[in-house]
Image (cartoon, rainbow, N blue to C red; front, side, top):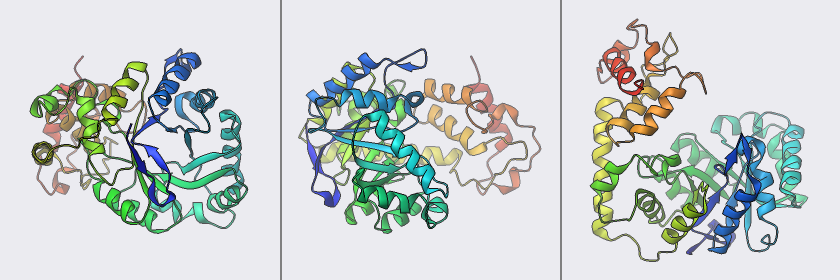
Length: 370
């Protein structure tokens, strides 16, 4: 296993981290025995960083991680997250206390403000007596060692949060099909923060259904997940790539990849970059995600629909795109293309003059088919 320094802490963490969001489940409950076996197998193969969160796996992930840490606590660094970002320090502290109880731990190594945005940080989170004040107090009490954050905000806002100087590391997305945060990773490195990548395999999208990508880059890696991890870890400013691993087989495959010391060759890097740029060019022909077309009076999320169509058409992620389309309007308020009423309000707003109504019909027909 390779190890890398986490920012200015001087701590060596494994290049592969265990992301405990996709543990073995049965009937909406974690299979604790199986989950512990999977997590501990990663420890046996050199993984020394495990990350969980209050809400993962129907609120049971922290319990499973706590069980897996028995006998390993002095060898493994624990990261977890607090999703509360309102004005109450007491509410934030309550979630910390519950997490410590679930994990059955006296302290946490890396405690993250979960999904933090610049607006939340500059608003309720840092108000007097709010979550940040309580975090400082809890850190001083020894309940956690380092304050960190995970983020899905814009790269520009990620840099602002990094520049506050209050955090030790950032958890952010970066993978073969989404390199938008590369600048934020570089900025974190320059400022002495660790950069921990979530979704190195694009939230599972690159595990299956991405045969087109592997074919385009044939010979670089044994499988698409192998290629995806090699790409992320080839970035010298990435500290750790966290993978949500639900089986021992996945653990062993990913640990083998993270243990390879030879970097990508210049030729391999060039081929990957050429593919990324070409796929981005093709995706931008259909939609650049500028969101000028929004809001839709009928609550259709036009950019989200087009993004799924890009995943289907450009990257060959057909199964994933159809799955995500089927969830639209169910898991969130983003309505699918089939709900378009053809009012035409979006047409004049698009700087690319995309025939939005016609393309939404194509999305509904392609992704909505059984």
